[in-house]
Length: 611
Ligand SMILES: Nc1ncnc2c1ncn2[C@@H]1O[C@H](COP(=O)(O)OP(=O)(O)OP(=O)(O)O)[C@@H](O)[C@H]1O
Image (cartoon, rainbow, N blue to C red; front, side, top):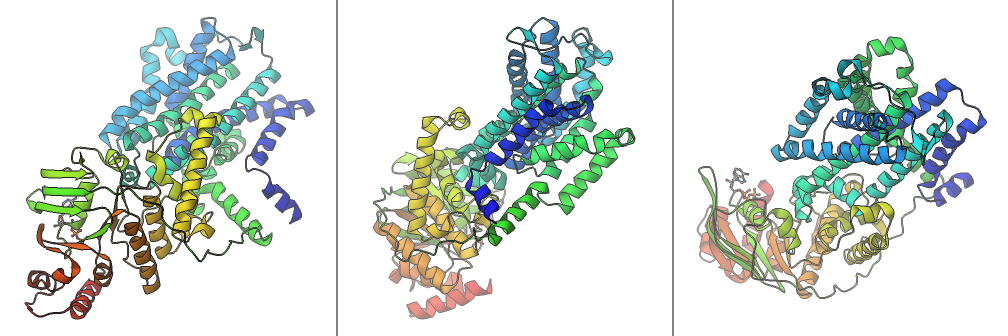
């Protein structure tokens, strides 16, 4: 256990780097030609698989185009070599950029069309590779393949097989370092938010289209590098290499190793390359075997070997006593001043086909006040929130926050304008810690570019430090600092709801929309939530609360708007609403002119409980 504790004290990138260094020095201790070639092919396959992991495992885009990007990189490098440009660094750069360009060009239409289109376009892209190579037969050699690729050079010297081995391993190590830096940065968290839900992504200010394209196109880059390395390793390119079978093997390796994992790509590639690919009998039935691997990886090993590895680490951590969580802090600090803005909705209408969900609705939520929006099921509350957030377009009317019109803005711009929200069902990405989940709310604030993240430039560190500091500050407010390293999705419902409020608060929003935040909470948790909302209000925040818990509404709201059949039927302070005959009639289906608060609350709550 002492060894384990020492290992865990080291930064997480040290063990994989050590493995990389061992692979790098293997030729020094004697490596036969066949093994050396297999290791090089494993590195090449690992590069391709890592690209798929980024787009599929992290960004959630099922796209099989890596084989086509690999071909683009390979033919680019091969043709450069034939034209006399044999420098491997130049070839890697150009091949990577060409693959990136193919990713962008094929990704845009696939992503614009939405849903399964990217999977389909990338699938056809792979099927088209042999035909494209035939069409340009004069240049690519068509079905006969491309020969005459000269040995690679580095700064003018020809690379012997051992030196080329070193180049391949170093490129793989460097790319995995880049990938790791991306995955642990804000971009990596944004990818996982996107994978969880595009709606969630836009609600924290992420442009869904740009992020999807970034994941897919970035995944093309290592495939281009792999292509350049392969062209120089074999000195000959045949269209058959870039077939659909390759695409399937890449997918199988990704699923086996664990697609939501950086190093899982290398593990999956090693299993496929060093195992079945060795046997010629396997080659004949490769597609069948890859299919079986996919099923085994997907069904038996949910999350692949990476998931098994994580479980093993967790078990060893427990055994070594490394998993103890500090206890919760009792006193939550004061909320610093929030600069809430007025939310004004006037004359808004929305129809879904013939169903008029909202008609001529006007509501106002002011800073330093809790405004509640209530109404029976189907009265239009969620539609209203979705229109404020930019998920639905209004048919008529205006929505402004602090005087700025929102109704024409896409959802991620609305979030950037200061509107933050929670969801009816807590919406948290998998594979992120509580701290990262809260910090993900800051995706729309000051940015560090991808290059800043990859190279760990000062700007990246500044943004990361600010993200962590703000996330910790808000976690303290909701009394969850002690859970900062826990996996967000594994928390109980009450904690997940508080976590969502924390994520919304981390941007210091101008307007906070809470969609049934108390639903499913026990009494203690509701009290804690109520206390938090009160403190947000007292700090000057603008809170719009959509809620079915009437005791909470009556206790918290300064003003209530009641929706029924898509229209506001009553508005005013709780003491007016609780006696309004129209409200009672809508909720209870009875007319009562002298009903009082406790009876109404009980009756309404019972009614809500029945639903
Ligand atoms: N995307 C959609 N497509 C078609 N109809 C929709 C859509 N969203 C909402 N509606 C309809 O609009 C009306 C209002 O629904 P909405 O979900 O806003 O009500 P709600 O008050 O939030 O209900 P609940 O309390 O059950 O969440 C309903 O008739 C619903 O069927």
